[in-house]
Length: 91
Image 1 (cartoon, rainbow, N blue to C red):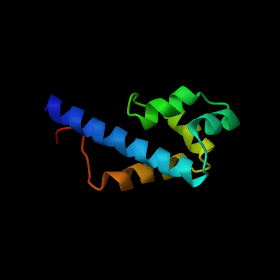
Image 2 (image 1 turned 30 degrees about the horizontal axis):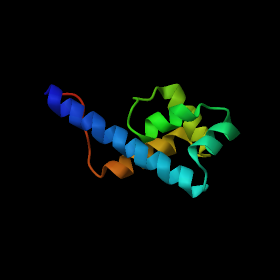
Image 3 (image 1 turned 45 degrees about the vertical axis):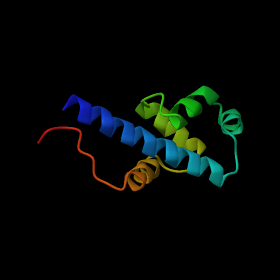
């Protein structure tokens, strides 16, 4: 079960990465420019885009604001990238 959880977690982080990159490129902005213009750390964007960090809610919210979308839209983009339902608990 632990192995499945790790695989699913990586799928979610990968979907987040793709969603962030797509939205950032929609503005034709580098990580550095997006970070600078929105007073957030470039390293935060980089870690999310490279699946290195599991984001906290506050970080996702700030990132969504920087991308000029609602946090719910960012989650919807992640779901769209997944192309499958992932359930992280045994039911």
